[in-house]
Length: 89
Image 1: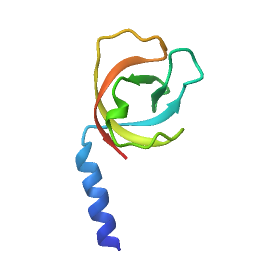
Image 2 (image 1 turned 180 degrees about the vertical axis):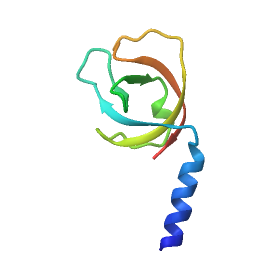
Image 3 (image 1 turned 90 degrees about the vertical axis):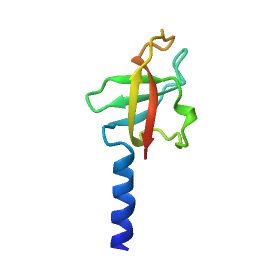
Image 4 (image 1 turned 30 degrees about the vertical axis):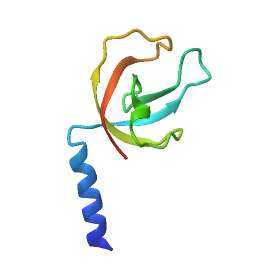
C-alpha cells in the first residue's frame, strides 16, 4: 500500500512541476461569473477553458494548475483572464 501511495503521489507531482495551488470558487450568482480559481494570496483568476479538463467542479476544492495570461476582457471582473495549461488534482 505504501509503495502504491508513493507512485501515485510522485506521478501527480510530475504533471504540474511548476503548478500553482488554487481553490475552486463558484461565483455563478454574480453577473457574468462562473467558476474562478482563488490563489493562496486571495487573488483570483478567471480561466477560459477549465471545462476542457477532467476536473470535478466542487466548491472549495484544492487543485494545482499551470496557466498563461489570456488577453481578454471579463464581464465578471474578479480577476485576470487566464488559459489553463495543466490541472492536477
